[in-house]
Length: 269
Image (cartoon, rainbow, N blue to C red):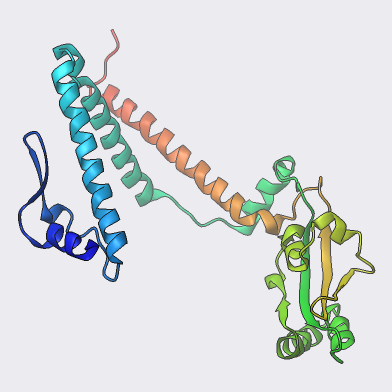
């Protein structure tokens, strides 16, 4: 029945709803239903649109009949909105044509050094490697040893061996991550997890599944200390580009006013 109802709404070329003198025709709802949508969901999407369309018009009609002529005069608001929209669109075009979005490492470092107090870690951040492996695997100690190595060949070997024998192996892309990400792998809160750390290793036996969860904490910065600059790099680049954008817009406003003064278009009496 739902399928037939949706079909009758979308496929016949007639008016499908009316509010006063306003009419809704099939072309306005024909594209609402994606291919493959179930009949029930199709009907729901169509009816939601019809009800929303009707609600807007009912409100508009009652406002038209009940408000005074002065209350219905929105010309000033429309003009202000038009000017604001035009200003925004021109600013966007002006900025997009001139904004330099390339930010050097030196610029990131300089901003970080001047604003370290703005980049304080609320939870510890770490560089880590994690694996979940069968408790009886003969490779556990070998992988652990190579996980903790500074030799790139050992690390590559640890990645390869863990990938083939562990249920899960995550190197976190050799990037700084909140300790909460590592804690999720263990199914623990990070504070209890850190209490288990010994010599940069955290190892927990999962007796229910006869597995061992192991994390090697390669580097660690405690909560209350500044994040490492690499952790903040993306955010700082966004801040610096935002500052450039603001300066461009400010400069544009000043230049336009100055040009208007010089040409006699802007005069203060």
